[in-house]
Length: 96
Image (cartoon, rainbow, N blue to C red; front, side, top):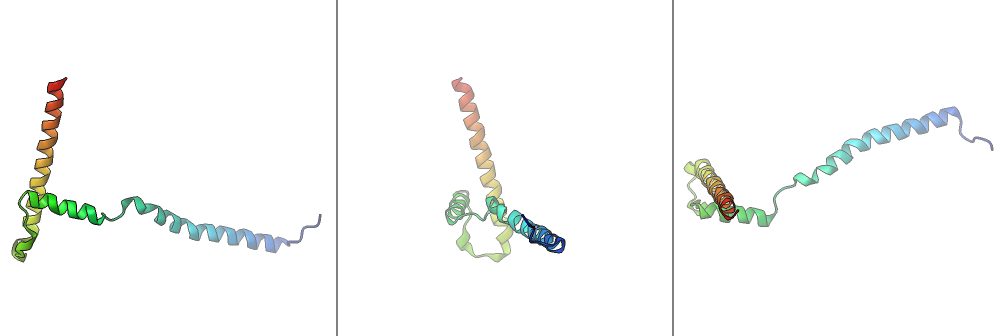
Protein backbone atom coordinates (compact mmCIF):
# COMPACT_ATOMS: atom_id res chain seq x y z
CA UNK A 1 0.00 0.00 0.00
CA UNK A 2 1.41 3.33 -1.03
CA UNK A 3 1.74 6.16 1.48
CA UNK A 4 -0.14 9.18 0.14
CA UNK A 5 1.37 11.76 2.49
CA UNK A 6 4.79 13.30 2.04
CA UNK A 7 7.09 13.74 5.04
CA UNK A 8 6.32 17.46 4.95
CA UNK A 9 2.56 16.79 5.17
CA UNK A 10 3.06 14.34 8.05
CA UNK A 11 5.13 16.90 9.98
CA UNK A 12 2.49 19.54 9.28
CA UNK A 13 -0.27 17.27 10.57
CA UNK A 14 1.76 16.43 13.69
CA UNK A 15 2.44 20.14 14.30
CA UNK A 16 -1.24 20.96 13.85
CA UNK A 17 -2.21 18.26 16.37
CA UNK A 18 0.37 19.54 18.87
CA UNK A 19 -0.75 23.17 18.56
CA UNK A 20 -4.40 22.14 18.86
CA UNK A 21 -3.64 20.20 22.04
CA UNK A 22 -1.73 23.13 23.53
CA UNK A 23 -4.54 25.55 22.75
CA UNK A 24 -7.25 23.23 24.12
CA UNK A 25 -5.49 22.42 27.42
CA UNK A 26 -5.99 25.80 29.18
CA UNK A 27 -9.57 25.95 27.94
CA UNK A 28 -10.38 22.52 29.33
CA UNK A 29 -8.65 23.17 32.66
CA UNK A 30 -10.58 26.44 33.05
CA UNK A 31 -13.86 24.67 32.32
CA UNK A 32 -13.24 22.22 35.16
CA UNK A 33 -13.32 24.93 37.83
CA UNK A 34 -17.13 24.74 38.01
CA UNK A 35 -17.02 23.18 41.49
CA UNK A 36 -16.11 26.61 42.89
CA UNK A 37 -19.13 28.32 41.45
CA UNK A 38 -21.03 31.26 42.86
CA UNK A 39 -23.56 30.64 45.64
CA UNK A 40 -27.12 30.01 44.57
CA UNK A 41 -29.91 32.46 45.25
CA UNK A 42 -31.28 30.13 47.94
CA UNK A 43 -27.89 30.03 49.68
CA UNK A 44 -27.64 33.83 49.68
CA UNK A 45 -31.17 34.15 51.07
CA UNK A 46 -30.40 31.61 53.81
CA UNK A 47 -27.25 33.51 54.73
CA UNK A 48 -29.29 36.72 55.03
CA UNK A 49 -31.85 34.97 57.25
CA UNK A 50 -29.02 33.62 59.42
CA UNK A 51 -27.42 37.08 59.70
CA UNK A 52 -30.75 38.67 60.60
CA UNK A 53 -31.21 36.04 63.33
CA UNK A 54 -28.15 37.46 65.13
CA UNK A 55 -29.21 41.08 64.81
CA UNK A 56 -28.08 42.26 61.37
CA UNK A 57 -30.57 44.69 59.84
CA UNK A 58 -29.99 45.29 56.12
CA UNK A 59 -32.78 47.89 55.98
CA UNK A 60 -30.97 50.32 58.27
CA UNK A 61 -29.17 51.81 55.29
CA UNK A 62 -26.49 53.47 57.40
CA UNK A 63 -23.44 53.38 55.14
CA UNK A 64 -21.19 54.70 57.91
CA UNK A 65 -21.46 51.38 59.78
CA UNK A 66 -21.75 49.10 56.75
CA UNK A 67 -18.64 46.96 56.88
CA UNK A 68 -18.51 46.76 60.65
CA UNK A 69 -22.14 45.79 61.23
CA UNK A 70 -22.16 42.89 58.79
CA UNK A 71 -18.73 41.69 59.94
CA UNK A 72 -19.90 41.77 63.56
CA UNK A 73 -23.02 39.84 62.60
CA UNK A 74 -20.89 37.22 60.82
CA UNK A 75 -18.71 36.88 63.93
CA UNK A 76 -21.79 36.44 66.15
CA UNK A 77 -23.16 33.87 63.72
CA UNK A 78 -19.86 31.98 63.73
CA UNK A 79 -19.88 31.98 67.56
CA UNK A 80 -23.45 30.67 67.58
CA UNK A 81 -22.52 27.88 65.17
CA UNK A 82 -19.48 27.02 67.29
CA UNK A 83 -21.57 26.98 70.49
CA UNK A 84 -24.23 24.82 68.85
CA UNK A 85 -21.59 22.41 67.59
CA UNK A 86 -20.04 22.14 71.07
CA UNK A 87 -23.46 21.48 72.62
CA UNK A 88 -24.08 18.69 70.11
CA UNK A 89 -20.71 17.11 70.90
CA UNK A 90 -21.42 17.30 74.64
CA UNK A 91 -24.89 15.83 74.19
CA UNK A 92 -23.44 12.90 72.24
CA UNK A 93 -20.80 12.34 74.90
CA UNK A 94 -23.46 12.24 77.62
CA UNK A 95 -25.54 9.66 75.76
CA UNK A 96 -22.56 7.31 75.28
